[in-house]
Length: 535
Image (tube, rainbow, N blue to C red):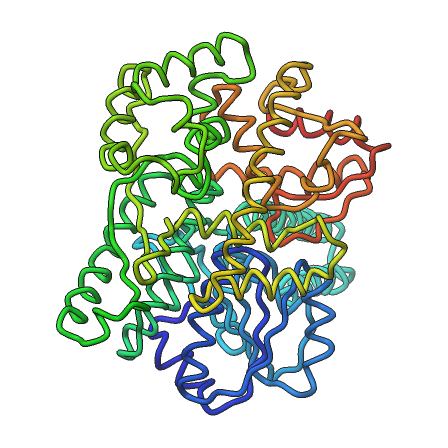
């Protein structure tokens, strides 16, 4: 069931209990985890944090902890399946689910004892009625029994009446079977309801706000969580703009509250600001040239994989009037006179090259006087640490490192994540250019299809969901295709049906249903079925 009062129905319930915290490996979930950890530390709540990368991990973690815990908090996992059917828990186990994955399984909505959904609701959820989802099979059995009883009772009647009884019973049975088939078809269509994706980090921050325990750190984590959903195309741009306005009010409130405090002048002070900044990835921690070449927006606009695109880039730099020596060196080393008006200069030239959306609403944070980061910088850094493939480390180790980089006391790790993010973005750019130049992007009717050949550089990186998502985003932008994030959930359902109809050997272990693993031998028949389904 949906929780309407998150403080009363969730936090007040677990505050005096031992809690198992299962967290999915994505940035929004990490930020929600940080907020909830801060609240738990404030109230001395005992908890165990367990990273879970997929359904198998979730099942294993639950089996290991079900004897010690009654209350389980699931962050960005668990909402889009029948969780009780999946985990088979005891009747006293209670699951609090804060999940952005869509669609939500309706069975979770109607379970009001063990499943508590910490999900922000739309005005019109479109939740189907109980009778459309659940049906008592005993009614059909009793009806069949009555019909058979009528037939046996009618055996002593004349043959004409017995024939009429037989015909009536047969008609009633056929009518019930028809009604059941219609109910099953209707149920299969509405077993999942689509609610506009939200953010677990923002839900947890608003919980802290309601309890008057919110801090600037919590606010910054929720900003990162919202930005993550936008960077990885999990929400439409208009929703991002709307929710940024909500966060802006909180930022103004915190900045105003701390204006007269002594620590506002401290060298270690933290200040969050709302601003319009450039859609250039990591440009303040990179050279301007590298950032332009590896940002999705500018590289797609210039079509940098082509010779004409490279010429266009040179024309753009010339139009800005910036020396190549300045553009190619680190941003921090550029002349102050250039940096002061850099945004205005870039925006003016970008308008001439049909890049009118070069600026975007975002937030920045300053730690003292030296360290400044955009929210998107932290998203890319944390994602790179989370999916680091350079060292053969356990996923749990990467999870902890990504979680640590969100703390302002661990800026060294954040800078390490930024360096990894640069390598990742270069790998994506090179892979996209290679796919386009070798015609690996094929149109399969209702969708585009790209096969990365074995031996492709950095192919190991794209076995990770977030890196794969960014690669797909770049490929779609390069192919001039406009897509909405909601299509991903429909792809997930289509993948399941295509695999089922062709008996393809697939592994649906990711919480994001649009990411599956498929045996190479079954690729042909799986794609044929997918084309048929989506046509």
